[in-house]
Amino acid sequence: MGAPTVNKESVKYIRHELRTYLNHVMGYSEILHEDLVSLEDEETREEIQKIFEESSNLQNIFSLSFYEEGQPRDLFNAVEFKKNLYGPLYIIIGLSQRIKKRWEKSENFSTLKDIQKVLEACRKILEMVEKEIQISESIEPPTVTAHSDHPGVPGGPALKPRDEQGGSLLVVDDNEMNRDILTRHLERQGHRVMAVENGYLALQTLKNYVFDLVLLDILMPGLNGYQILEKMKEDESLRHIPVIMISALDEMDSVAHCISLGAEDYLPKTFDPILLKARISACLTKKRFRDQEQRYLLALLESKITLEKELGEAAEYVKGLLPRPLLGEVNADWVFAPSAKLGGDCFDYHWVDDDHLMVYLLDVSGHGIGAALLSVSVMNVLRSQGLPQTDFMNPSAVLGALNHNFPMEKQNNMYFTIWYGIYHKPTRTMKYASAGAPPALLVHQDHNLPVISELTTTDLIIGVDMDYFYETKKEIIPLDSRLYLFSDGAYEVKKANGKMMVFKEFMNIINFQPHEGGGNTQSIYNQIQGLAEIEHFEDDFSLLELIIP
Image (cartoon, rainbow, N blue to C red; front, side, top):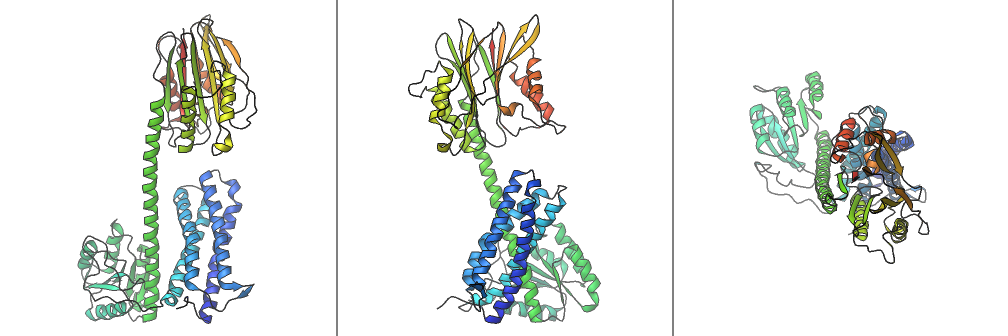
């Protein structure tokens, strides 16, 4: 049997209607794409770029399906068209919904309005495709199941409808003949139907069974249609069920009021079967789309929770690799506060021998598992001295070896910065080299006044140029000094007033810490956190302090 097609007249109609909606999607996508430069949110920028690309894919699918060498086709393969259409269409819907939720509380009304128009056009495409093309796909007649008095299982999902396009429907009407006629029409259209005669039974039935749609009469004794609709919309478990009002012609003002309360549509009591089918089909299509959207959002939420858990575990693992506080001739302590996104900070210090103390801090570009893995890999190499033919007492040689062994093109285009130093205890000399890292800050007292110095070089980050040569510098460490190493996440912080902290402010915080007593890392962290008035920084906060008497 050949692939199903649509007749010539239907193709003309479908082609005309689809072109209109696709032009809406493409037009608003282009407007959003042109406005990308004004958006600061990188995540939204990427999502709009993807919407623009997928809208182009929709246009290509439409052209290939309905035209051949620039001329309209008389027939087309309906199954193949729907299969190709749904992929990019659902991507656009999902991304648009994410942007809509993100921007609903913002003042960017223009972007939100355009996103809503994209969503509306996509939903119109879905409704039309399901309504106009579904009949042509039915090569074999649908299998009809035995009639059941119950459309669903109490407390569980609804029973399978009589065909794929059917749904589980509840009819609420106090007139027995109205219920009977409407129920029989609906069952012939492939739906599973339950009918009740009053509002109290309707609400009880809705609690016990799962329905896709409610057809609700307005004028009934006891609870009328208004009251039932209001109670449904107030109930979190029922408010998502679409409602079609059933009304007489002289009740149109009441119908308008019901729609303002949340009803999807209305039907006159003297309904036409074709109109009945079209209205219900449109509502069920919206319901299925909403259910699919909810499943998509739930899957995203579950993935987000899982990812956050894994990132938290990874952050704890990285934290477990960091060194213990050091006590003795040199004291060392640190604060490490990973951001909401796992980053690539790590550091270490240990006595290489009785006279030499090694210390470094590195920061891998970007966030996520990849950055953390590269950070841990470099830490393991340095801790095990696993760089062949490298003098680990020579900072420039260490940075050169790291640069040679960790090129960006072999690390998923990630690079890292590092400050690496060797302290020689007998001469109080610190030899150090730096690759794009923030300067280490050396603080000591001169006539009871704090003096702060920056220990840094202007050398290139690690991973960019394999042939780059790094410089080693030396600094004599005065008596009773403190040396601070830190990542840029320690000072690139947005304060409570919305302004970014500048490096000078960070230096002032360091400079005015108590010079006597224990370590200052936690105090510095608390002060910066207080300035920002946030629990978690956007980047990893890493701060290391050496107290050198």
